[in-house]
Image 1 (cartoon, rainbow, N blue to C red):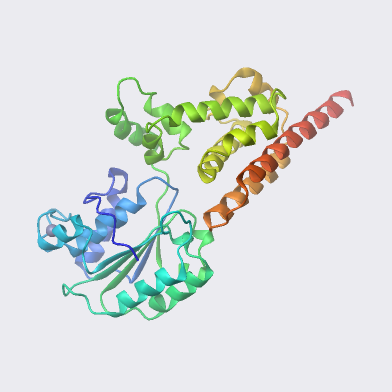
Image 2 (image 1 turned 60 degrees about the horizontal axis):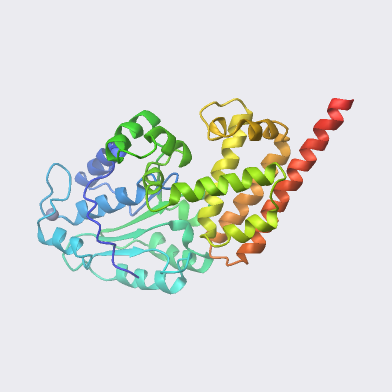
Amino acid sequence: MTELNPTHSWHPYPWHLSQWQDLGHLLEHQKLPHAIMLAGPKDIGKGQLARALAYRILCESPVDGLACGRCRGCELNKAGTHPDLASLSPEEGGRAIKVDQVREVTQFLSKTAQQGGYKLVVIDPAEAMNGNAANALLKSLEEPSGNTLLILVCHNPSAVLPTIRSRCQIRLLPLPGKESLIAWLSPLLPPQSPKAGDLLIQAGGAPLAALALLDGDQIEKREKRLQDWIKLTLGQLSAIEIAAEWQDEECLSVLEWYLSWLLSISRWKVGASDTLVSKAPNEWQATLQFIAPNLLHRYIEKVLLNKRQLQSGANPNKQLLLEELLLDWSALMRLSRNANLATGQA
Ligand SMILES: [Zn+2]
């Protein structure tokens, strides 16, 4: 069990305002459930909403429905040492929340609140709990004690045990609207940065991922990866050469980037114009025209499966995993091209 990261997230993001007001209303009328699942795409600020709610509940004198940032409870939260707030995330270097971590938290929940109010646990992300960990949590959900609240932040609810899901009040947080995100993101960008709209497209519409693209050489790295992949598609570079290059990077973030492109190709093929592909080189677009949709969908399923396995703590040989995916991509392109030729000749 780790203390909650002391980032001072007193405010939720503006696009979560109506959820925030609704949660505040439940709190004021003492109608909060014992477990809430904040479910929605990654990097839209669900964790911040969870923390803002936890801080608000533990604040002794909230101002305008927000934690005041000055009282004893808020000072403890600033220091990340509030005795009635615990957080559950994968330990450093790992991707899974382990059963021992959950046991610590269930013990924490079974004790009386030290400050006399709520006891809170933020689990982020909930799908990182492996089977044993999730089962260990079940008891706390089945027999909640007193003023306890579990906030489960979740990017992929289907990856959470149904028995856990069914005991949570699920709040769906969709991808925020593009216009409001552009208005939020634009003033945060340095003068030389790509435009907010372009960053959002690259980040699959997720505002925090768009902002993170400005860190270090993320944009250059993604551009290089795209060029490699285009060369593979056009038969100018081999899957093995590319996998050797890509394996130096964090595998999960490579797969997330890859998936955002595959999904973009899938949308582009059904006529969506506002996609990554519509801004990609024409020669590549021309080749992508041939892809058979059923093969593309099967391929996306496979990449998704690999991503989920990595998220649930699998530790495969990165180079082999990438090689296999890229070889499959080459095969998919070859099959689609041949099928297209056969149709053309018929
Ligand atoms: Zn306060």
